[in-house]
Image (cartoon, rainbow, N blue to C red; front, side):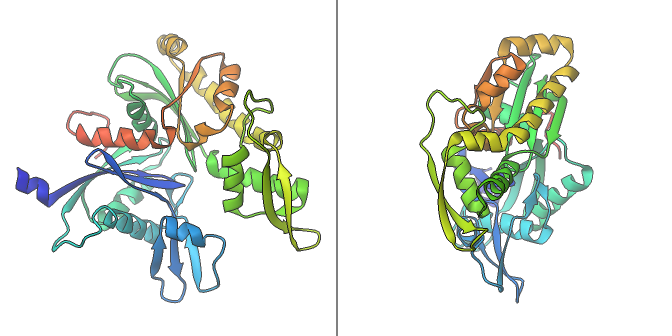
Length: 340
C-alpha cells in the first residue's frame, strides 16, 4: 500500500477565476493568482501565478498575460493546461526521476455546462491526472465551512468568487436548488474602473482597481468602523498625465451598488424556489457566505437586511472552497455527489 501511495499523488484543486489553490496532505501547498504570461513569438508560457501577476498590465508587445478562466470556466484551453501543470510542479520543486500518477478533485461552478465540465477534465488529464473527480463549488464551500452536508437539514450557501456567485440550498448530500450568476469579484473590479473613469476622469488598471476593492471596498455607505480614505494613481483622461486622487469607501459602495443588487436578487430568487421544509431550516440556520467576495465590508449586513435572515461569514472565506475540496478528496469513496 505504501508503494502504491508513493506512485499516486492525491491533490485537491480549487480552480478559481482569480486564484488557484492546491491542497496536498491536508495543507494548502499552492496559492497563486490564476494567470500566465506567454511569449507571443514562441507561444511558450514564461511565467505563472504571482510572477505573471507582476507583469499584468505592464507588458511589452512580445509578452502577453492571459487569465485562462473567465466566469469560472476555462476560456483558454492551452493556457489552462500549462497553468495547472506548472502549479502542480510547485508542490514538488525538487525533480524526481518519475512523476507520480495524479488523482485529483477539482471544484467547478454549479451552473456549468457539460462541454465546460469536459474542458476542465481534459485540461487536468493533459496536465497528468489519471483520475479526475469534480465537485460543485457551493458543496465544497459547505464542507469547508464545517456543515454536515449529508444531514436532512437545509443550508443556504453563497459563494462569491472571482467570476461567479454561486447560491445554493444543500440538503442530504445534494444541491436542491441553485443559481449561478456571472456577477462576482471581477465585475466589482470592472465597476470600480468604470466609476473612476466616469466620475474622476481617471484611467486605472485592473490591478489598481483590485487594490481599491481590498482597501476601501464596501457594500454599504454607512459602516460601523470605516476604512481610511485611499490614494489612487492613474492617468488623467483630460491631460494624459499621471494624477492622484483620494477615494472614500462611500464612493466605492456607490460604484458597486448595481452589481450587489444583482446578487441580492439572485438570493431572493433562490429562496423563492426553496421547498417549504428547507425554508424552515434556513430560517433557523441562516445564510452562509464564502469566497473572496464575502470579505467586502458590510456585505453580510446588506444581505441580512434584504432577506431578514441571519448571515454568517465563513472563517477564512477565501480558502473555504479549497478546504472543502481537500476534505472531499480524503472521503472520495464515501461521498455520493462527486462527479467522476
